[in-house]
Image (cartoon, rainbow, N blue to C red; front, side, top):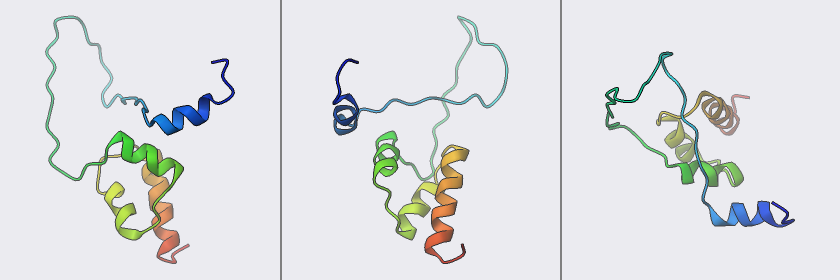
Length: 90
């Protein structure tokens, strides 16, 4: 990037990207049909997750909001640990 301030600028811009995970192995080819299923449960945005990474809200309801959403296993474990700590279970 040749910019010593890049990381600070990137964080301040709050324009994170995301990755998707594969739930079932297989092949996808041009012309294959794709179905989008609407999720009706609790949601957190990528921006919510990004902000939480840098400044986690360690209040039970805030942590539970993440745990009620379909988040990645790695983040789920982190949030479960945070919840256990604030509830005095660890």
